[in-house]
Length: 526
Image (cartoon, rainbow, N blue to C red; front, side, top):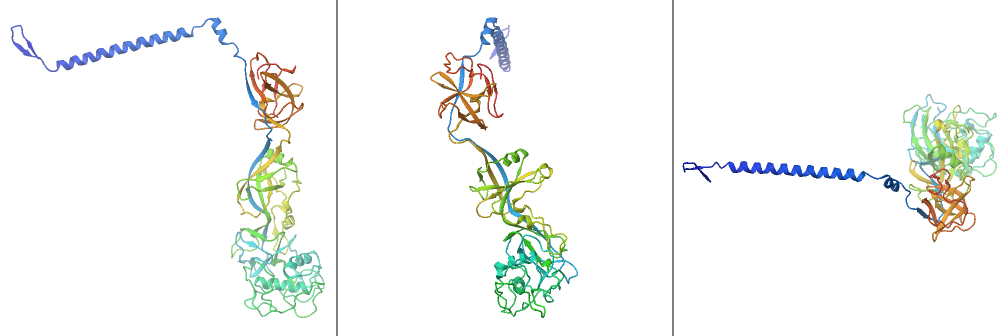
């Protein structure tokens, strides 16, 4: 494009002029758009302010009560069950701690072998530990050894020994440490792989104090030519192998004292070489010592008497379990006993109940209390601190409460986690279940539910049995409440035609429910 000067000559126009014009037009458009937006915004503000301006009549109309309405629910004949959910740990029913004692004839009590590893099951005659080269033999019994026994001794400890040996060797139980008992003790040591201690003839005093035990056999057993059976890791046996026919089997009749003569193996049973546990077989729960340690301390912990599940409780849970009905159902959930039923063994002792709170439903746990008697101060390999004798509870130190549940069926691994569901209450047959907000209680304590049918309402008196998780188990007092009926839960306003067959005001009163989920209801507005 070119321009023409006044004198008629043409002059070229700069090319940048067109860009400048475009920018001017763009700015002009932006200004116009901004003005339009401001105008629209102002108009909208004016409209909103005008819309909020209402006359007193309009405000009064908006504050009026909403149209009459109600919320309803259904009556059910399903049983209402209240359960307590707990988590516990599987453990043996009783615990026994084995503590070593220095054998006679030795200078120090040193752990020289620990053949019983954690988790191992031990039978009668098993070697639980070796102290200074001598065995600690496991036998069933209700109290620990408190003296060295020798031929001619009499007493309840002799009877306990004979009862323990009877299933193994047919020993007569007569309370006298006679020839048959001597032979059975000898076989017990042979089966374990040790030589039985020899005595010095029959006892004339019946007291303790006997010759020290001899060293462990390396080849032949005392009194026989065959090598001993089993070794230190034996779990006990009948002793049939390795006896070498040194003596005839003991008669099942009277166990007469042995005749005078040379000392014989088995005439002495040192208290340091026997540990009694209430129920066998027992499981090694924990090994607390190591080879080379001093043996005058706990060596290992044994568990026996079946399995139980220990659960920690709150004070409220303990109170609920204390009042548990005899026919309450206890069912195990997730865990090794899933789907099985059990019983409540015991509750622990509370701070104000020093004697405990035994429930008497231990399902036959045997002898754990006496097995837990402390062996301190005796000459034997004492059993100390059995955990829960015969299902008894431990103390609730520091406000801690516990319950022991006894499962049915096979044993489970120690320490396994187990869920427990305890049925606290179940509504009886013939009762009904309604939402808790359907039950209203007047000032006199009478409870009613309001049923509705065909636009009409009727108040039906009920007895509230118990309430759980928003539902109430009720019993209709006049028989007119059945499953499937519609009940009023909440009402707003006054229905045009209530059609109530009762003179009481169904919209007044207080929601029942044993304090759970209930709310007060105002007249005409549930």
